[in-house]
Image (cartoon, rainbow, N blue to C red; front, side, top):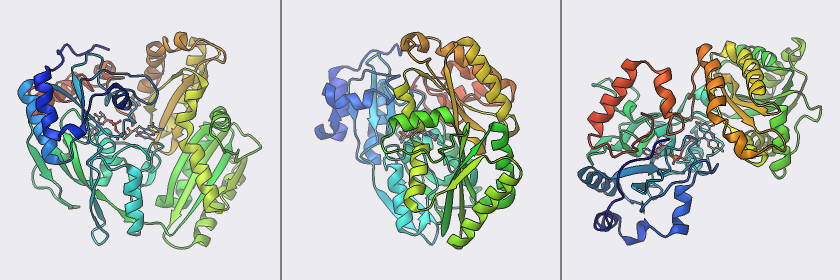
Amino acid sequence: MTESTRTPPSPALLERFAAIVGPRHVVTEPDAMRPYLVEWRDLYEGVSPMVLRPGSTAEVAAILALASETGTAVVPQGGNTGLVGAQVPDRSGAEIVLSLGRLDRIRAVDPASDTLVAEAGVVLERVQAAAEAADRLFPLSLGSQGSCTIGGNLSTNAGGTGVLAYGNAKDLVLGLEVVLPTGEVLDGLRALRKDNAGYDMKGLFLGTEGTLGVITAAVLKLFAKPKAQEVAVVGVEAPEAALSLLALAKGRAGTQLTAFEAMPRMLVDFALRHLPGTRDPLPSAPPWYLLVEVSVGTTDAEARALMETILEDGLTAGLVLDATIAGSLAQARDFWRLRHGLSEVQKYEGGSIKHDVSVPLAAVPAFIAEAEAAVGALVPGCRPVPFGHLGDGNIHFNVSQPVGGDKAAFLARWDEMNAVVHGIATRMGGSIAAEHGVGRLKRDLLPGVRSPVEIALMRRLKATLDPAGILNPGRVI
Ligand code: FAD
């Protein structure tokens, strides 16, 4: 990964930046800066002259105007949970971190319009809670929801476990307030479900990983809160059976099927070893575990009947080996805690090489089989733990190092293994960046999966919106 060739800003320039937010909101002391410079898997560690913590849209605008005027690189950061290294400064010491954490107000909740206006730094869990307090649902749900922010979610177009029923983050937003790299403020905080007046500008900032503008607030869509839910953990033999059960569940539940997640036995073992208080929901230890959720607008009895129908029909069809329905809210939470903990627990099993791919649903079993065989041939003894959002065809094809192997030697095979796995996904019509984005991790892979016309258009958009090239330089393109 190439570092920026910019030189670090002078002390006099840094003082001008600091004056915008005031001394209390500038971080320069090494220990206090560290959480902003290191990402949670320790894959990226950056160097920065300062972290700025603006408290208003006007302060963000002043920072970006000064950055554009002086050619200073700025890296927007929300909860720092991104998985592609985009939110961490590089090692040049030239990139200022712009932390949006102080923009943390929920400006309005409007149940009559089913909307909520949140500032960029509001943590996802707080948005979910504010919706719940108004008897509504904000359906975005990720393992990182206690730390990630709405600004980060929209900038990465986060997916998560609710996509099957409600779509990705960009499907959940009606309007945006954005500061452009030049410092101009684009006030598009409109709460309209129909608005075809000209180009849809918000699309420029959703999923573009902070390269085209800094989101400062958003109008989010709320949904009717389900009156009843059932969550089950289901054991199946193989991905083929999981896919058949998905089709069966969709047939019985339609849009009431709200989650369908897959986890291989080995990854459940990782969770049992490393997540305190985790219990195995299926002591029969089947090869694959599925987390299935249904949500209804009527009664507990209807939700239970729907889940039982899916499981009984699955058993009759020979797809289900074992299953358990959560007997209480606490047990349902335990099932979800197990699922949401799967990213974290891989950290404790040594080196892990990650792939965030999607393939057409019908190709999921063949993809997993081929990719497992290929990585096993490449690094004998490695431990593939493909898991994730099976209902969306999105598999986190992660591979843990061989037991007792050398972590550094294993991680040195990262690019080689990526090439093999991405090659299989691409051949099957899939994507190499399904929901985590491109950032720095996959930037150099993008030209291999996008046409020259698409790449040229991306560059033209970047040059138009960010003529000084100051915002998240070297990320995505
Ligand atoms: P950051 O990590 O701080 O930033 C991410 C990107 O957004 C960077 O490019 C940054 O520059 C930019 N950015 C941040 N804020 C702004 C802003 N206000 N304006 C402009 N640009 C901004 N992701 C999924 O999609 N699905 C999952 O299921 C999922 N599960 C996860 C589980 C765990 C345990 C972890 C650690 C991560 C997971 N992620 C998942 C990845 C991550 O949580 C998401 O990408 C999330 O949306 C990032 O939000 P953040 O606030 O932490 O952003």
